[in-house]
Amino acid sequence: MSSGIYVRLSVMMFLEFFIWGAWFVTMGSYLTGSLAFSGADSALAYSTQSWGAIVAPFIIGLIADKYVNAERLLGVIHLIGAVLMYALASQTEFSGFYPYLLLYMILYMPTLALVNAISFRQMTDPSRLFGFVRVWGTIGWIVAGLLISYGFDWDSQAGLASGLLRNTFTMAAVASLALGVFSFTLPRTPPQKTGSARGAGGLREALGVDALALLRDRNFLVFFLASILICIPLAFYYQHANQFLTEIEVANATGIQTLGQMSEVAFMLLVPFFLKRFGMKTTLLIGMLAWAARYVLFAYGNAGELVFMLILGIALHGVCYDFFFVSGQVFTDSKAGPRYKSAAQGLITLATYGVGMLIGFWVAGQLTDAFAIGVGEHDWRSIWLYPAAFAAVVAVLFGVLFKNEVVAYKPEPKGARSTAQSHG
Image: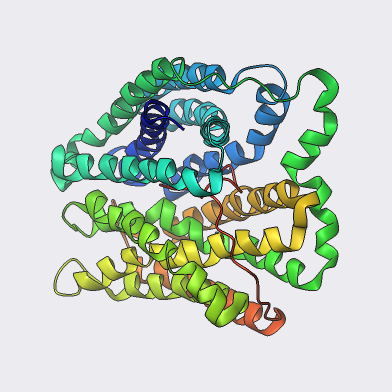
C-alpha cells in the first residue's frame, strides 16, 4: 500500500467516524435538554441505529456486492446524508425529526462495511495493515467530541438552554458533504461478483442465516443469548450517558467521554494476554462485569468530589467493549471456521446491534421516563442501578452455563468481522 493510498484511506476513516461521533453521543442531551422530548422519544431516535444495522446487509448484499463500486456508493450515501443531517438541525418536533434520522441511519450503517471493504481491497495483508487505517476512525470520533466540548462549548448548560447542540448536526452535515465528494477520489473498488453470481447465498451470509447451525453447539448458544442480553444494558450507555453527565452539570461532558475511545485502544492490547492467560470464559466475564461496575460508578458518582467515579466509569469502556465484543468475535470465528465465518459474524451483529440494542433502547427510554422527577431532571441513581443489576445477572448466568475454552488469538482488523460494532 503506497503512502498516497494510506493517506486517502485514513482521511476516509477519520471523516466516517467524525460524522458519527459529531451527533450520536450528544443526541440524547439535545432531544431531552433542548427540545424537551421524552425518554421514549429519545429511545426511538437511538433505535434507528438498530434498524440501520438490520437493514444494512440488504443494502450491501443486494447493491454494493453486485452492481456498484463501493467508493461510488459511499460517496452518494454521504452526499444524501449531508442533506439529511442539515435538515435534522432545523427540526423541533419529533414527528419531523424521526423520519429524517431513520432514513439517515438506514443509509449510514452500511457505510461502516463499505469503508472496510474499500480499505481491505488495497491491502495485501489486512490483518497487519488495517489497524493503522482504522485507528484514524477512533481519532475522528475523539476529535468530534473534543470540538463539541472544548472547541465550541455546545454541551454546556448555556448551550443546552439555547439549543446550540443543533449545530452538531450541521457539523456532521459539512463533514458528510466533504466525505461524499472525497469518496470519488478513493481507489476504484468494483464489485467482486456481479449479477447472479452473488445470488441469495451472499444475502444469507450477510444475514447470518447459514450460521444458525452453530446454535446446536451449547457453548455458542449460551454466548449468543448472552450477547443479546448484555446489549440491553449496553444501550443505556449510548442513549443516556451524555444526557446524564450534562444534566448533573459535569463540565465538558462530551470531551470527557472521549476517554472511552482512548481506553478502547489501550485495552485492545490486553485482549491477547487475557485470552491466553485466563481463557475465553474469564475474559468474556470480565467484560460483562465491567458493564455492571460502570453503572454502579455512575449511580453513586457525582459532579463534585466523586467525579472521579464518573471518569473511571467512562474509562471502563475499553474493558466493556474489548473484553466482551472483541473477544466474542474471536470466539465466534473459532466456532464458525472458514465455512461460516462471515455468516456467523453477521448473525452476531444482527442479534446484538439489531435485536439486543433495539430492546435495550426501548427499556432505557421507559425507565428514564419512569424516574423523571421534573423538567430536565431524573433520579439517575435508580436508573443506573437497573442496567447494573441486569448486567450482573447476565454475567452470573453466563458464568454458570458457559464452559471455558482456550482459543488461539489471531488478530484481525477491528471492524473486519462486523459491519456495525464500532463506536469510534
